[in-house]
Image 1: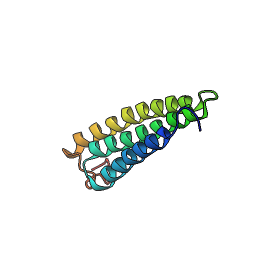
Image 2: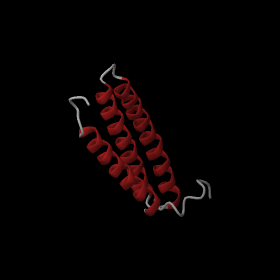
Image 3: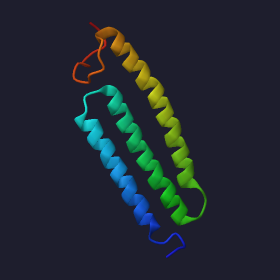
Length: 105
């Protein structure tokens, strides 16, 4: 057992709870902006788990490197997602996910 001890299990538990909240938020809410924030919660939970496991291993920083790439993908996802949401809002006047069947009239 390392100096990190049983704290790894706590980080994994917190990451699991955050990921679960993100999953429930994505599946339950119909507002596309809330769904986008729920996806961000799930990605942050994955980042937390990656960094916790990287600290547990102690050799290299591969978990932190993967977390950095997840953050970069999340930033691109937010940019594209918000552009799509703005285009949809201009067409339909709502951001309700149930109405989002197509972007054309």
